[in-house]
Image (tube, rainbow, N blue to C red):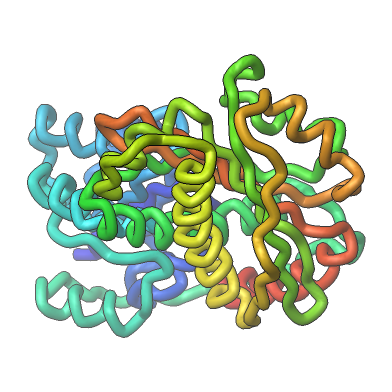
Length: 338
């Protein structure tokens, strides 16, 4: 009997990549879901043997799906596939009934070893692959945005894992926001930040083969006290100390995110010296004072929070308009392989 497979991920790219490396004979019975609620609807009307479940999704995330599955007691084997690779994320999903936790992007060899160990059924079937081509005109259509978002999601997860291990905390990772925006719209991109709250920011340039941009890290001033506590700093918090703490956080997150993106698009980035954009100022003032630095840009916003702590920071990757063409061709290989 052919096993029925459900792949639940909000990224179209991630769904296709995973489907491609599943056994050929499983292909006719693969179903897809774009979020947790969609997956549960499928599970209620269709007998599913294997559920490949992402964690960070809109509408209903992977944790919520696992909670509902515990209530429903459905006979489905769950494999979590996520870019959120923090130790606590692993512990949580395993405690909620997942069989295993696979890191994005999943390697065919790793998946094959796991499936052989669990001895799934392997009936006959045919694999049909479709070649995907990105549009010739450089633009941020739905497909291209989906690719950027998935690449950013994996990189964000790697950075969150590093932060979680260093600080022994659980890092909250929302879905990345990807947009092609004007500089005047940067403040709107940071809508999660209270425009009246005080913030501090650092900007660090980066450059690769045909790709350049700047990483902008913004930290609310209310976060410094808890950051100092996590880093075991017990002295007085003045501007100099806060700047040092800001530098420490930016070094961790910016470096890890750029490394994660570079590995996926097969290039390396050189990073410039960090520049302080301002301290203890509303976000609107920081953006306005530095608006001449940026033009129309591809912006990837990654928002980090730490559970049980009042720590929130936003990391924006601002790619130059000229970088889009190179990135498009780099990412086209991901779609061709999916």
